Amino acid sequence: MSVPRATHVGSLLRPPALLRARAEHAAGRIGADELHAAEDTAIETVLGVQRDSGIGPFTDGEYRRNDFMSQLTDHTAGFVGQAPVLDWNSGQEQQSDDAILNLIGGKLLHRERFTDREAGFLTRHAPGPFKITLPEVTNFVVANWQAGVSDGTYPTRADLIEDLAEVVRTEADALVRDGVRHIQIDAPCYTSFVNEKLIPVFEAEGLDHRELLRRCIEADAGIVAGLRERGVTVGMHICRGNYRGQWFNEGTYDGIAEDVFGQIPVDHWLLEYDTDRAGGLAPIRHVPDGTTVVLGLVTTKTGQLEDAGDLARRIDEASRYHALDDLALSPQCGFASEVHGNPLSWDDQRRKLDLVVETARRVWG
Image (cartoon, rainbow, N blue to C red; front, side, top):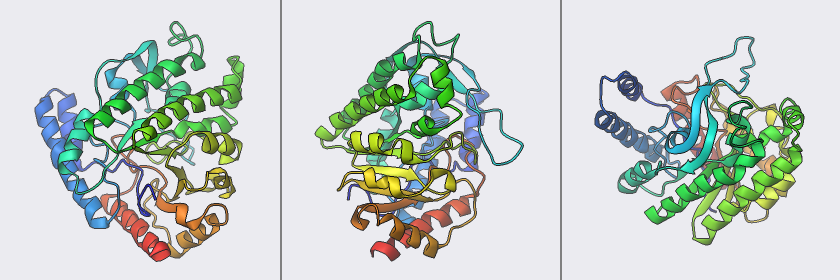
């Protein structure tokens, strides 16, 4: 096993004190040192929560980030301005319209380190093995390229893949030099290639969506293979977007599973499986033998607690397609992929982490 039977994706709800400190810093009322101190205190607390629940590997909850991609966009040359780009779905008539993303408007270059503070603090304070998460190339291909802003430098979405992959590779290589032994790459936008609303967008831009998918896979496979050659454990997480309980992609894994699972040589996949939007479990048959599939059966989008028996039955169903010894359990995504988090409480989060651990013990002992 490359990952514990009971694990989680990475981000966790920010405590109120940290949210207040971030607001004070944004308003110019406290400096960077005071903000970092507030982050440190909150991270020490949430490391204790993970230790007490028995879940692993440890993360810092992504407490130093505005969202799961912000460290990269804040420290990479080429990002300009902000705009709402994605259409978020809530299952309700009213949707959030305040989700904004940094647009690509210049040459993408790794300007400075952006996970060194995270790695250094976890090296000193994590009670056990920890992981660092990095955003994946496809996220930016789908969400951060916009005609009229990006095409002066990158005429099509596909043209930014090589430069963005180099940014991710440079930071990942630096993490290895820092001594980090577990890196997770977060790739919610792979499901854009089965999203019937987005495929026509790519085609209207003159892009073959299957060729675009192939190039993204090729870039990721190169990054992952390079890390594993150096003894790093690598996981990749796929979902359908996670913003305050909402999602932006719909579509099952069937249309991408053979290519994505078969060609990107990760140690483990963390796959969203909390709703019917993900489809059936059969696509995990395309994951190579010996590669772990972490089943994201516990939702982070609401506080409603799943039934342990139902989870065990889903795991048993999954074992028809991938060996039980190569399965694990997690929440479907992070609890707070952006700073304000999903609509559930701190206690809800703790109960869900405990449920993952208890169910894993029930199934695997």
